[in-house]
Image (cartoon, rainbow, N blue to C red; front, side, top):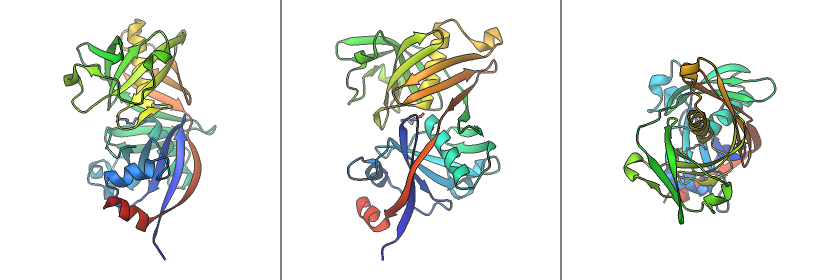
Length: 289
Ligand SMILES: N[C@@H](CCC[C@H](N)C(=O)O)C(=O)O
């Protein structure tokens, strides 16, 4: 009988993930295996994969183990590694609670972008302390076909280019990554958000994610958009001393993003587990060859 590897499937505002619980970091997940697991025809299907590992058992997280027991080893759908995934952290924390590893309330999760504080609310919402946005100097430009827009360079642990457009349809089909220039601004690639206004401090986005293509939501992208919109609107909590909250509609739902006067950003949204099952380990081993 072949060995089985447990998995779950979940999503946060329809940004969907294959979840692989692997406390002792015993499951080998090379890029080809991740890409096949995330493939919607050849595998389970997902925008990305959440490898759930004890921090102490993972070389990239061992030094965070004292602060956070669990490490979110996040991978994009093409198998590449990314620093951070905002929707992923919510789903990851929800999984930890469902599995009985943590209780409702405040927990910490180690990520490649540092330790994140997460609040698991009674109503099922999950709030993540996403840290501060970094806004590198210098103009960037996003293009789709003949159109191009000035964009804001925002780093939320991972890189984003945020372009305000007249209509989300202008983003086109987003099958391929929209060119962003200068490419030197993003040596490791970039996630691209297209944004329109929906009302006061209320925007909507479409996104092309590095390593995943167009997705129905991006948590770090929503935070980058909220900060870019706030600066465009002349709102900077560090200057006014007040909280700034933006509602960000994504194709898969709604996220609420608050920036504090100290620059800390909090994101609140849902997290859902939809299924669980077993992966055939022999099949997965063959994928690696
Ligand atoms: N969907 C994520 C972002 C995942 C990583 C991204 N594709 C990258 O390569 O930086 C989110 O919710 O933040």
